[in-house]
Image (tube, rainbow, N blue to C red; front, top):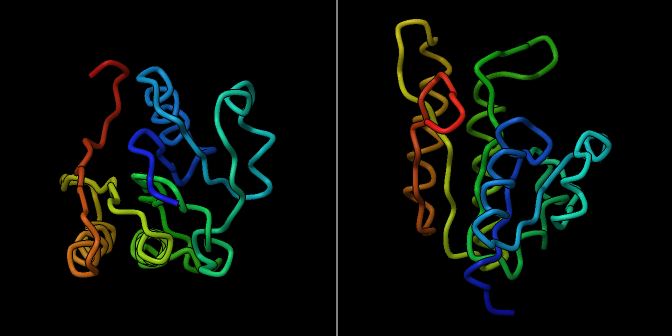
Length: 160
């Protein structure tokens, strides 16, 4: 199946960022698929009526297989500035491993482009967080997929 230029998959679809990106894409006429964790479906509200939903875990490569087929772009929003190593939630796992797994999904499913939301450096951001984001950026640049990196500002303001 060839990719439709208006078909976009957004990872982290049940998060504030993922939901807002999906809403903006819908307003521009895109055909949006949200990739969400199984337990997150209930949090989507009315958005579920306007998007396709796919259930997977970005840390489980087997669960990602096939979800990006037919999409022209994957926007990866999963990551965190807060680590909880006791629960296995290190910066490396949340920011690098998730991006690596999604890039692998893009390649195996034939998606030509991946957009990675990264982060800018600020005095209050930890080195380990920024390092994991930069490693994710470098990985996307090496794996043979057209990658777009957006180093988003650390403070979100609607309309800015």
